[in-house]
Image (cartoon, rainbow, N blue to C red; front, side, top):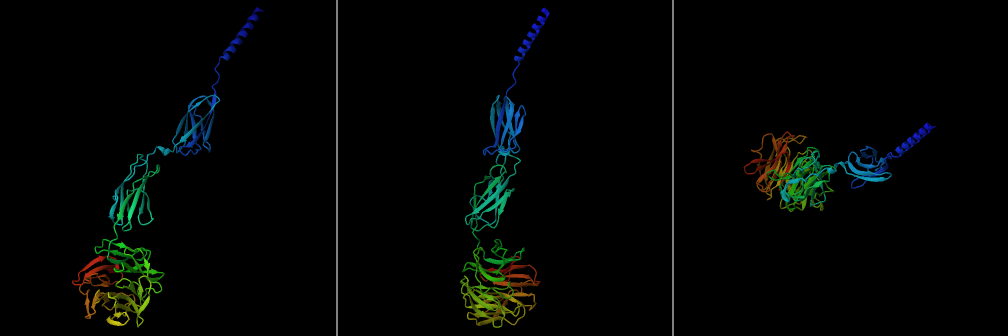
Length: 501
């Protein structure tokens, strides 16, 4: 019995000890919750699918479409929370979790390029600021920008404005550090600025530069060249040195036969309009093109040979329409017929004496032959016949300023062919007082060539004309020749229809 009692006591004591030991154990660590939002820095737009992870537990979640996330059952303690996504700089926030509490984190993430540094502004080298007297083609040159981020690719944009209209020249994405502006306006002032971009940062701009183009040159020589692309004729002006060639008309219209009036300060020319040839005027720089003829076009045999004439004071024109000769004011008013051939032949070329007392005409048949060159007074009466009853072609009609001499060309071979080919065209001066003829080509023209389309120079000490092979297909060039000693000089290659006023 005593033994049983002792055993019972032992069990009771053991149980108490076990209970006591159980009560002395440490309770489990408490847990809390982390919520948060990930947004773009500055704009605060939410960012979806951002990976948010805790360290040191490595628990990971992703933000939803509104940029929100939640981490639950996070043991109490101190953590480092990191948000990361491609295209953004990783962001770290400290987080302290306490039992049964919720903490909220906000990550403001910057673009991955946020640490990228912008380039320096380019340094303009040429033209110098406020440069004047520049040609119409201006090279823009600058020193390249420097960029601390070696992998950045720099591109340049150029913006050019002017002081005469609202047009803007904009050149994009240049990699080089030079660009040439072409066909600028004479006399205009231009303002230009370079923008450099590294594709990451805001564009960097240079200060605005300024330069001014030369005034329009006072060219006195005019001629025609054919465009190689669409075969249209283009009118040019130039100086005697050939260093100031300027296209006055464009290649999208056929324009030819320039004739200058110093009195009017205008250049007249022919242009094709709806399959007809009409008379136009323009300023010496090619601007302010004005159509003169309308009801009666300029017409006749071979439009490349048809010519017209200014009055001396620059207020009127004489021009042919088949067998009729018309006078018209330069503004298109006052159209009148002044002459008609008696035999139905076509009037191809005309010139008007400086005193406006008489007119020189060249007529021919429908194939360009049967040539007559003669003068008439303003009532249409024939004054003098210069060329008549000959075979072969003629042309290039021009009256000297004193009204004493008439300049023309004629094929002395007398050759006639349906193609209009000439074999030996010479330059002649006919003196109206003495009825004598001088051959300027006799000892000066190369064999096998033609002298064509002749005009007096302004001082009449020389003539300007076209010379070409008589094969009818070779290159045509413009020459001058002194009248006294016959010295010839090449002026312009691949050019026709000269005018020198």
